[in-house]
Amino acid sequence: MILYGAPNPAPNPRRVRIFLAEKGIELPETPVSLMQREHKSPEHRARNSLGQIPTLELDDGTCISETVAICRYFEETQADPPLFGTTPVEKAMVDMWIRRVEFVLMMPVGQFWRHAHPRTAALLTQYKDFGESNRETYANALKWLDRELADKPFVAGETYTMADICALSTIDFATVIGLPVPDERANVKAWHDRVTARPSAQA
Image (tube, rainbow, N blue to C red):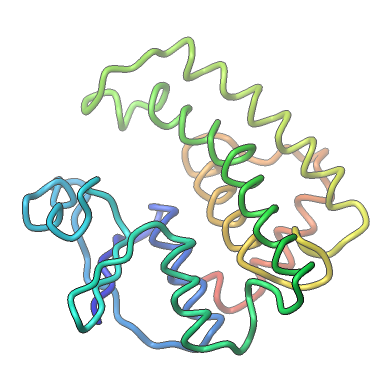
């Protein structure tokens, strides 16, 4: 199988790399250059019609896109350690938190990157006022997450899961593009220290 991705700071390929590192699965990443727009090439669009990465191509030619879907495939093929929960309640909570991270945290980060960051200005039409408005939206999201992390060590509860991987890749990317975690978000910072200390965070 082939895993198509890109190096840091691209957050989505990093999600899969962290997941694989937690699983102890060695699968070298085949780079697709974002700067050279290789992800929009006809060759890559044949694997992923949206022209996005990461994409996992299985030995039979099946292509799986979207980070959570790719990671779920590996969860099914290698159950230990479980990163999507083990009981029905745990699995539901992990799914809930993944969705919350993507909509509440990642969406304003993506909109800021898309509409306010100078790196994307040359590539896309930007609506800068809207882009900048996402600073406050993201700040409010961090305030909410800080409250949620007040009485639990990880995003979905007592165990490190895919929800933490999604949150870590989002928050680290946000920091790179100019949206750092404020010092007053002590619970988020403590959580970030815990998950960053894991060897997988270097993926």
